[in-house]
Image: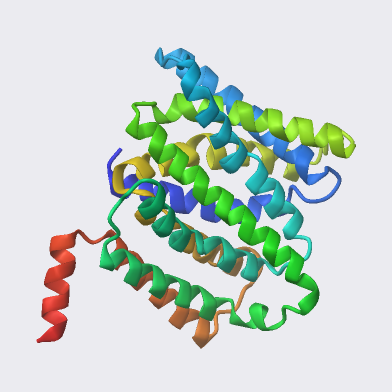
Length: 299
């Protein structure tokens, strides 16, 4: 699959998952829903690897990195976000999560020694400004009592960023994305299971069609497929550029909300979307095309 297709699939699936997650909140504790989600995703990936003849065996020295991947990207970050969502407006949560673009720029430079392109920084700034405009009303309504939830969300976002860097590191050392994700998700499921047993959360299950349907979507599409596409992007174009997709997720979610929840677009939101899309173009432009655009604008 080419880069543009990987990017599009990632944005559309994860942008839609915001709506699916709503149907997971209710009878079943968040940590238990996450156990179900990543356990199912692990099974799907293991079956896929087996059918395609993709080896799931890794060297012993690779497993600590796969376990860290599972901890940062397939368990603890989601657990923190789910709990923060109880005390934060969805808009603010989306804005915090989109800061992963900046975190990935810094972490890529510090931990991987990658050179950061000016266009990536410019695009990220435009995207974050656009996100703030889109969700400004919800940001204004956030009170001081939500400070702890904001801190938890920032920690969750940083863990996700470290997960991105770990995946990039694994790919640089020749670890295949799909099989690494399968083992990483298995580790993540174990961490979630241990936490659930420690916290005493009851292993309930919601038999409603909305819960089962959203669980299937999140396990198959948002976990097994989208993570494969996104982390392939991380290895192909770098964590700093791939992370810009996180800025587009909430825009897709709002577009769905227009249809499902009758969301009304205001001028500020439209201007914010324009900034986000403009930043997206800048981030994904090749260096040659970006330089040509700058020369054109200077005339």
